[in-house]
Length: 180
Length: 139
Image (cartoon, rainbow over all chains, first blue to last red; front, side, top):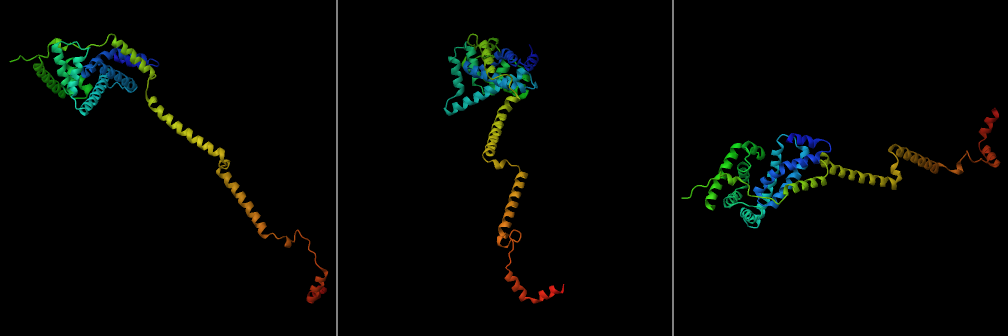
């Protein structure tokens, strides 16, 4: 069922919960990986994904379809992630610890990470990137979204996104040179 | 010199993360449960509802206070015009009482008391003023 049909179903009397459940089924996996690659930990990703859908549920009655449902959900998830990371960074700053180092440790101790040496090095390098650069890199590199779609989700110009991706890719390549 | 590592290698794009068995189906049921607890479609009503409840509470408290005041002081219940008429009547009544109290003298009330004149007083009066007797005899 496409997004238009899902939204029409959602607006039918008494079908709201059922339609929303279908939306969760359609997008939860995609959004989960988007979040997980940003926060590394499964538990954190699970909490953030849950918050994303609860917020979407609350805001869906006011959704005017000015953007695609998928773009709208991605935007909510991205905002959740950025808020979460900012909070974590403030806490790390107060406790004088390096949050990106913490993320690397999460990756090493995570039982739900099965990467080989090259993949581990790549993901460690990604976790060292500034948040916004990391988001752009992940969306383009792993999710293979078009710059126009990323632009719609993040509200940033295509030119700025291209520059951001280029810088991120360069940093990662340099990191891999050191790590491998 | 080390060869530059190419991040475009296909195997690097594979997802090395995994999730617990059956995570996504469990997640869907979990979310379904959460939104069921939160009730059906929220919207403008869910935003207005608490505010309306607050206004209702204030209105209820105000009405209770108003009713209590009316119950324990019945005079207040009289309408403005009724109150004015009652006050005017009361004032007039008191004023009338005051007039009678101030000016009524039972000793000099000619309407209620029979005048009794002593005959000796009449003779004395006539003797003192003989002119009146003369005038009366002219008739």
